Length: 361
Image 1 (tube, helix red, strand yellow):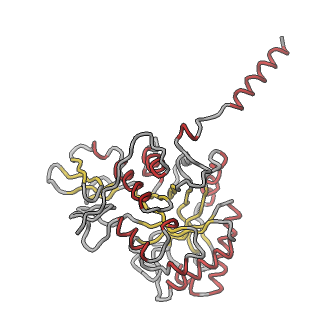
Image 2 (tube, rainbow, N blue to C red):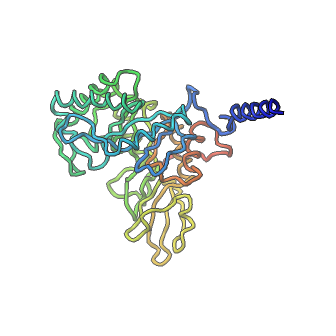
Image 3 (cartoon, one colour):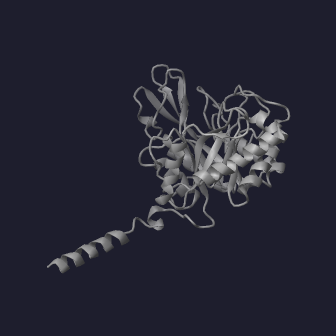
């Protein structure tokens, strides 16, 4: 009897241990396929460990240049350790530390000094090794520009190239080195950078505030005067010499509202907000809400439809894939990231939409 129970227990354990989850075909993923388009999420203020089923890369935001200009400052190192632990469940995902962010300074001083720059680059290598990372992402906003109230110098653009050279030398050829760039494509010597970086993440969002769109794919009457559309951001980067296969399209999993509009909205349910009416801009190919009481433009945002069209646009342009800010902008089911990943990789269960061509002027 005891032997039978032991055999039964062993059989149960074997079945449990060999039970597999859904296959890649069932999930609509292509992890490990050399032709896979990437989908990268910036993880900021991590409340819970991310679900990386439909992600290829994660950039942890943020590290910073320390106050002595010679190393990396991490405010929550234990959080980064926790994030890297998801590789046990998602061995396919690559995790990078993004250094910078809006208002993160000390870049200009560090880059201007050869010794400080070299020390910083070596510390990037230390961080990669200590946290078992796959690479470094630099998000300096922006070289040569003090709009974020950080120090700047006319030499920043040239020194930025030297910084990327030094980081590449420090971390070696097998680790990833990427960067996030302004939508305009200004502030960078892309041809000089090409030898050092794996790809460029173009921040093609935050292009306007209400009563204008946040990230219109194409220009329309609701493009903020003096700003750019997403397609114009991409063209600006391509014209400056970035190969399409090294350009990653930035997507916002959020919107921008008028004063008094709720600070956080689940964009998958924004169309249901009481007191507002949903609209689709057929030229810019993004959604927006107007306020019922006034008729005013209240909230410009991206949802599944517009994100699918932008993913198709990225395919049409031959881009490397897409990235988005930020992970916690998606809903609990991950509808937005799944839609983008499956559209990029041709595994969306239902037919997608084709991006409308920009109207001829």
